[in-house]
Length: 541
Image (cartoon, rainbow, N blue to C red; front, side, top):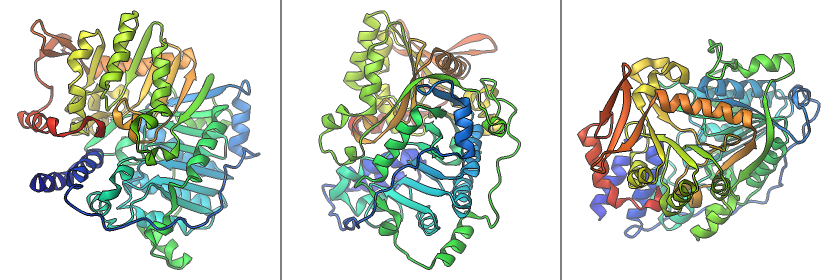
């Protein structure tokens, strides 16, 4: 057991980041019975709660008010193009005059992370209040930058559900806190951005190059929603709930390394790799797949064209990470709220989820929908397109059952997605892979969910999640257009052969091609997953 566990931990160090986070947690669990913990968190220091600032007469607030047709309406602009999504964040930071509240699972120290942090630094130096809340799982390489950011005037940085010690990498962090594994296995997976209390961005993207089509090796097909209107104050209240929770620690209490402010600012400039104020992104495509241009062009005019509807924001309570009972965690989860809406569908449910492990409850829901004549379509990752092959083993257990129940099942092709110009992942051509990371649902062609929630046990009972449900047939049409382009031009359609085995269907020069094994994979990849599958508890996926 010790030998296997050590090999497992070693293997995680060579994995991709998303694979690493899941695999490291599993490896730590295997070791928990043989190794002792050595650290504990510092006591929470008394601190004054802070709250979101109401929208004032800033330029962004005036633009929002000029664009809203009615007070109870929420305006939405889908952001399927990664570079547009990053540009929207940077533009909002640069135009903010009062406040910026950001909440993320990952902020990487690559070019995208440095651009965002540098823009936040510039905003703070011109007088904007910045509150930055980051989950502590992936901060080993960025904690020095975050600590230096917190030394700036008008900037506060907090780490959510932090590790106590041995902070050099994920594996060492878990190893030093094995007796606290239950808490540390639960992470804040939320993604939220609010500027001047007037405009927000919610969706699936973390802050790293691969989420914004800037990684030469692999890039994610993902989805964010730019928002104004009635849902924004709801999102502000959610941010405050997390910011003021017992699970959010000021970064300096965890990282330490105090120094004088001037020196920390000099260190920050070196860490960010920029001595001058950050600049907006250049050479953006003229339009995205929906025909929209960059949001910055409309911000200049003082009025934004959006799709309107009624919406509500959902988020798990921050203390979900401390709950010992999975059923209790699920009872107030975003997953439960979304699945309640799914079960009420009358005609059609269309889902995009990169990590799909339906479990018995999910299979029951799909069977009931199909029994009631509701069409169910799912787009998820193929094994080749998954950045977490271990999760794919959990999904693969349910494929035959879903197909037997009549679910229309599609798996993204890593090669086709990367070269599909309409998806915007083709900046690096065939040298990169396209991976699905979007988490969206469309119900009865009128209700749309966009958020951070995957359809897997981890989202339901382990991680905290955030998302919005919008009732808007025009928005549903736009989302379905994006999904249809993905599944029809960049995915395999699955079916059962007469013998009951899975076949993958695709078109090659307008001719149908039928594959009988996992597409775009090697024998060793398939063998690796086959051998690990029995060792991975489904609840950890």
